[in-house]
Length: 321
Image (cartoon, rainbow, N blue to C red; front, side, top):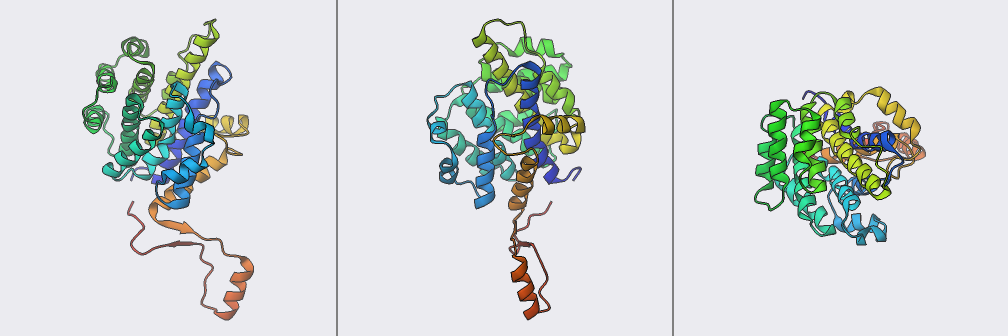
C-alpha cells in the first residue's frame, strides 16, 4: 500500500476536524460547535464492541439529541457520525451500505442525508482501499446510490463535468448553488476534493474561504457559516482519507492542537488520534489487555517462560493489509 491504513483512518477523522475548525476560525465563532460529538460516540462504541450496535450507541447519546428535528446542523452531525462506520466497514460494500443506512434511519432517513452519507462513505472506502480513480469515482458513486429521487446524482455529475473541464471555484459555485443547501454543500465538497486531489491544504481552504463576511442579517450569516462548516468538514474527511495524516500540513495540526482545548467533546487533541488508532486495531482483529505489573511478576516467578505480552489476536482474525 502507498500509505498505511492507520494513517488513512487518522487522516479521515483529523481532516474532518481541521475542515470544520478552519471554517469557524476563518469566519467567526462557530454557530454549531462540536459537530463531531456523535462521531466520537459511535467510534467509542465500535471500539468497545467490535461491531455496530445501535442500542449501545443510542445509550451513549444525550437523550435530547435523539429527538432533534431534522435541520442543517443535525444533518451534518448525522453525516459526520457515519464516518467511523465507513472506516470500520470499508472493505465490504454490502456491510458498508447496510450499516450506513442503519445509522441514518435513527433520524428519519432523510433522502438527501441518506444519499450524501452513501456518497461520502463510498469515496472514503475507495481511498482506504487505494482504488480511488478521479475519472471514474463519480460514476461509481452514482451506481452505488442506485435509484433515488434526490438531486445528489445530478449534482455529482455536474461536479464530474466541472472537474474534467478544469473549471474554477467561482464557476463551480454558480453551477452547483441551484439545488437544496445540503446537496450543494456535498457537491462543493466533492468539487474541492477532486479538483485539488493531492493538496489537502488547498482543498479545505477553497472549501472554507468563500463566505461573504459582509452579510448583516444574523440568521443569514449563521446559515452561511454552517454551510461553510459542512463543506469544510466533508472536504477535510474526503481529502484526509486520500492524503492521510502525512498530507495534512504540520502547521495546521500544531495550530489547531494549541488553539482547541477540547476536540469534539474530547479532553485534548491527541485523543482523536488515539481513537483512530484503537478503531483500526479493533477492525484488524487485534485487542489489547492491560496486565497488572504485580500480577505479571508473580506469574513470571511461577513460570519463567511467561513473556510480558500486551497485544493479542484470535486465530485467523487479523486481516491482510
